[in-house]
Amino acid sequence: KQEVTQIPAALSVPEGENLVLNCSFTDSAIYNLQWFRQDPGKGLTSLLLIQSSQREQTSGRLNASLDKSSGRSTLYIAASQPGDSATYLCAVRYSTLTFGKGTMLLVSP
Amino acid sequence: DVKVTQSSRYLVKRTGEKVFLECVQDMDHENMFWYRQDPGLGLRLIYFSYDVKMKEKGDIPEGYSVSREKKERFSLILESASTNQTSMYLCASASGSRFRGFNTEAFFGQGTRLTVV
Image (tube, rainbow over all chains, first blue to last red; front, side, top):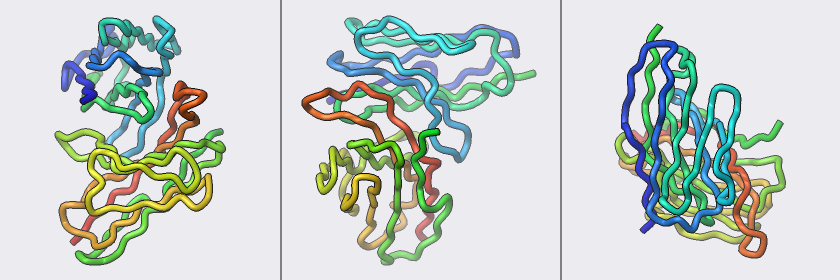
């Protein structure tokens, strides 16, 4: 069974810190990996999409890496801000999307 | 701007009612998905559809059915709502096929918070 694990489950940091969120998956036969952000009670907002042939993608202060052979991805957030507080979800695409349970991030002013 | 629209943000229904959750996408995507999200359990796939009139069971299809009569619309049906179906329901769409692969971005709706009393 395909499984996706996210570590840590929760993270609290002061504003300005750089941080790394981790995602691992058991079946490396993926098409792509997508990072999402979810604010409380809301839907999912796509942050970054990495194709299986790519090593990393960047958008602003966000950088996502992918090591398909080892089944790992990281989301790096530079210079964190209180507005970054949300739950971050990693999803791997086979024919459907399989999700991790997320990392709940709190950035304090 | 791409859009996946779910018909309701909040719904309250009574036990035993038949409930319809509607999802519409405007991106001409072949694939559409219904997930439910519960604390501690994450997002779990209920049903998905590769294309019009096609449907496949996900991980937790019991108590649900779906309909995809038009490409842009994917409906989730709770035949007889029960309290354990109280949850956040999320619809998503993406393009892809077994021939072309499934390597495109997925987009989600804003979610429907369903409470069954």
